Length: 195
Ligand code: URA
Image 1 (cartoon, rainbow, N blue to C red):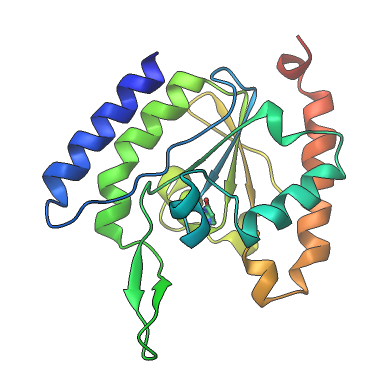
Image 2: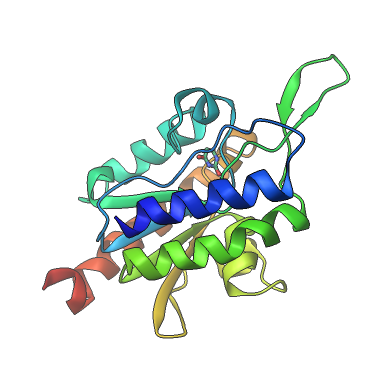
């Protein structure tokens, strides 16, 4: 219920701050009281088309790696930092994804923080630099922060590379798999997950 109200608040913010366009919004999904929450960057084309987070190429990769850990996507709450698809027109005239701007991230951040507070997961997994920097500080870099459990304001965070980065850099697959394995182990050892 509170998450529904939050969606209305996000819709109202987007109407006010970005009145020039009808934006398709992709909200978080999963159990409202999930113990594990995954936070991505922003929806891509498939996500905007289907209205669900991580259902395109990056999502399929994510699912494949989750499958190896004993965790299931169904027990996770999955969301994004920015809830619309940041896009631009390429030189070839196609609509392509772009990284969200600092203004877009700042506009959505208070709502992401509320979303985290409402779901109240034991651990938040940030995927890539955008949620890492938004939630843990601008100076962070995923190359250094990935795979290390962090505590901030009484919540655990586990930064991971963004699954899409493996599409461009297949060398990251082994690191991503290692971090996912570590996450699976950590969860077994965090008492709150096993209550
Ligand atoms: N990349 C993201 O960060 N989020 C999605 O939902 C899909 C791709």
